[in-house]
Amino acid sequence: MAPETLAIKGLGQFERFKAANAFRRLIESWHVSDFHISAARGRKEATGESEHLSQTGENLPLVARFLFEAHPKTFQTILDKMAHRVPGIASVEPKLMDDGYLALRFQDGSFKTPFLDRYVSDGTIKMFAYLVLLHDPRPHPLLCVEEPENQLYPKLMAELAEEFRLYALRGGQVLVSTHSPDFLNAVALDEVCWLVKKDGATEIRRARDDEQIKTYMADGDQMGFLWKQGFFTGADPE
Amino acid sequence: MRELVFLLEEASAKAMLQSLLPRFLDARIQQRLIAFEGKQDLERQMVRRIKGYANPSARFIVLRDQDSTPDCRIVKNRLLGLCAQANRQATYLVRVACHELESFYLADLSAVEISMGLTGLARRQRSARFRSSDQIEKPGLELARLTNGK
Image (cartoon, rainbow over all chains, first blue to last red; front, side):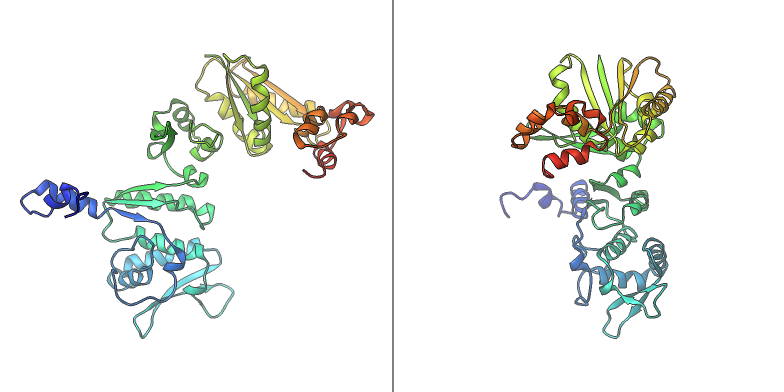
């Protein structure tokens, strides 16, 4: 065993150390999501992890097919949401090809033949990947998401924030890092912390502990505005 | 704690005050510069900012450009009306200081000359056109012309 291996890794393997075992399983199912859109689109090998989306999202077609076959209701919800959120898209339809690959066909209101997923924009694929991630029938106990705002339409941030919240309500804890005022505008006071670099170390501040932010929020403010106007003390670049 | 809060229509005003204020504001007075995203944003949010400001001894200055409005008094009265809605009596001032922020820079051409590494600008301050810089209606364009778009 390598010298840097933590005791929890060893102890956690033994059935009789129940707490260590549970703790190890908890940590091992933490999940970090940092999508790479080019990896997520197009045709893939038909093998690999297919029940959970991977960190980079490259197994998106496999997970989509798994949902399509094993959880058709969830899959239909995802497709309906896509149709709402991508401008100009009337419907999204899955089509299982002969070689087992699940192609998504986007029906644009003004075209007769639908587009295949490899021709739609990065933002569209990313939205689909988030919906697949967040409708996971077995949520991760801790889901970390890196700057979900990239490539997405700013107005969709409110829906996305709501989606993260629903995931948390289903049992997973969600940690999102963001630089999006629109995302911040859509979340609640209790949900926000910010990081401050101080003497080479990073401090975490809770928004609800800040009297000024709390007062403004009680009067119906939004934290995206407060952040941009400099009320998140220490967060701004000098 | 004594505190002076500036409500500004954009980040460029904040940048100017950040370098200007330390030169004449008493260091014991804390300052906060709130930059909004344009005048509509300023007018939409200023009441709430003043009303909910946590420090009870804070004083507020609302600074706005006149831009192309023909009468700056109308602008000022409207902003004063908004301040009054915040229910913090006698804690605010409204100043429609100039046509555009650039008016300030046109009033100190020697500073512009030094900071931009130009020559011959300071001399022109005495010409009729630049003697009273706030009479220039499009100071932004004028400044760009003087500095060749720098």
